[in-house]
Image (cartoon, rainbow, N blue to C red; front, side):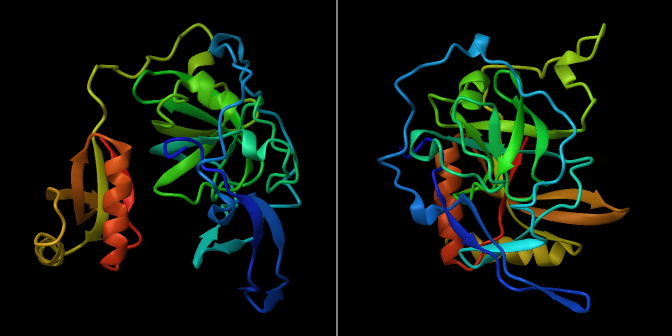
Length: 284
């Protein structure tokens, strides 16, 4: 199931967290974990769903989950920080999905994972959070409840339930290029605003361009040095994109463009061997 959902529900143990003058106890919660992921076992169920008959999740006021919301936690040596608020969260990236192997198992929030419900996993949004997910290739929008942690495989930003992946139209490919926007209870989704339908993204036959950003510098000289260091080793175009952040010039070093998610995975793995582990996906 190399192109399908990332199944990794196992125990994640948070290390002792130091905050201010206090030591917070370690916490254990369930969530997606690559150690429990067997790509040959997780799959879609035999019961198929009609995407047009799947209702969106409905954002509502819910208390912050007592489980799955530590200040930070560590998976495979990398520390992840949980956001205090989802207000203003809006990000583009790669979505995956997970299915039968984890149906019925506890999510990080303590709710059983139900692959027929509109839910998702995210590494840092508070649990629960409701988000609108837009497929950047076909314009389809869905609303899901984030109640789990993950995905920790590749450069994915969200892991969708089987039902959510079906409705979004990424089931067959296993991954999709998406925009994820947090919704607050009572806030209408983009495609449900009364009287004035929101414009759908411009959809063409071309796949949105994918880049791997491997560094951002205030000095063009440092950006050039990184490009020169990698050029003999990495068999991909390397560009420096000029930009601005907080009124200051910034030079972003990026690999690409790539046409397929698999290429992103391959080059990210190669970068890891070169000591560059914090690259992230940019979608144009």
